[in-house]
Amino acid sequence: MWEQTEWVKPEEIERRSMEIIEKEMPSGNWTPGELAVVKRCIHTSADFDYASNLYFSPGVVEQAKKALKGGVRIVTDTNMAAAGINKKVLSGLGGSVRCFMADEDVAREAGERGITRAAVSMERGAELGGEVAFAIGNAPTALIRLCDMINAGKLRPAFIIAVPVGFVNVVESKERIRETKVPCIVARGRKGGSNIAAAICNALMYQIG
Image (cartoon, rainbow, N blue to C red; front, side, top):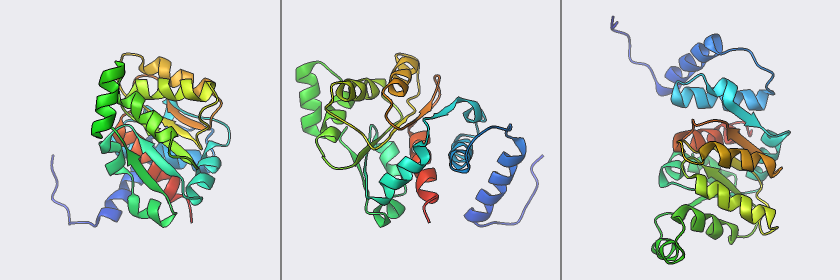
């Protein structure tokens, strides 16, 4: 039954939500930094499966925070993920977000080559130079292209957030990212999404004092 309650501030709602998450989530062997990411994903999705399906490569949280402090550019595969990343915090760290998916030249090249816009977008990201990270929440083909460039020695990302959602090549593409040995956070299995990719980016940034 609905109960009338007093209006509360957004930060109070988040605090209460996190308290509920802490009470209901299973125990795990996360580092404090990893736990913050897990909780943020659960908070974003109300899905406690993220307590078991998130994979963290050794030391990835500290490596990602170091890159973020250095002004890393984050390339996403959707404008939704780009919109969800807290750009005020990121810009305060000297970083920025790029998404090439809606660029006309990307669409044209993808059509000419018979590949996806996501794959071409990853190539654009690799051409940015400097420290670049990738937050992928939708397109397995983006992860596959990243793997190809990494294995060919054409790209060394600062870190990769690999959390596409879906059914076709989703699980396999995520496992390929794990095999690259690039610092990564992966939502193993079919679950994920642009909102989760953004949530992980934010969870990492919010840990930086």
